Amino acid sequence: MFRNNVYRWWNMLFFLAVLAVNYLAMSIPLGGMTTGQLSDKYHTPVTPAGYAFMIWTVIYLLLAGYIIYQFRRVTSKQDSVLAISFWFILSCIFNMAWVILWQYQYIRLSFVAMAALFISLAVIYMKTRYIYAPTPGETWLIRLPFSIYFGWICVATLVNLAVLLFHAGKGINLDPKTAGIILLSLGAIAAIALTFRPRDGVLPLVFVWAYAAIAVEQKESSSLSLTASILAFILLLYAFLIVLMRARERD
Image 1 (tube, helix red, strand yellow):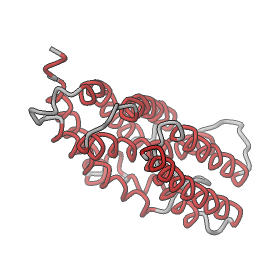
Image 2 (cartoon, helix red, strand yellow):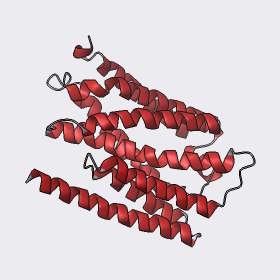
Image 3 (cartoon, one colour):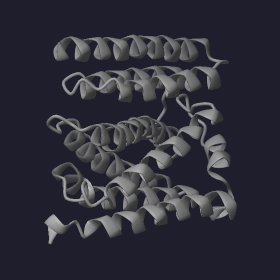
């Protein structure tokens, strides 16, 4: 049954459900405030500028490409598709759970949902990065979507952790600048650690996008803005290095 990939229908339904929940979060909006308004309310030292969230459009378009790809007769039974189908459903569930909990301002529970989304996507990411001799379809419609998606959720997890520390903690007294610099540094280290072995130059570029937006948003704090800018530049150089390493290994 698994080999027949019955999950592809569930993948499509849960993906459509994710789109619907995200649409309702903005249009109604759920909980009475839009996601952007909540981001402003729970502002942190690592909150990016609003334009950074446009990446969700790219992510969902790429995921739509994955959904179409796994419906093709030739590709629906590929191991690369079958291996991630169940985990994709879980990621959709956790995505929706996070949106709903965040919209209704259950800060602690929303972080739990975000952590679960992070874990499910981490599993998918690792499975996609170790596809042996990927076809062009696997490269563009499986690897690329989940590299960008997982990369953004890595950053989102950092931001949600900051929200938890600064807006939901009791008796926690943290210097915002110091905490922000630590979180940004940990994120950059994680981006390198996750991508060096699989030679993925895409995921670090997501961090570059996010960190550049953080530098813009935190411009009133020179230390935070400078740290984000420097780390974005380092990760940009690292991404180019990965591309060069991959080219050299193919020769």
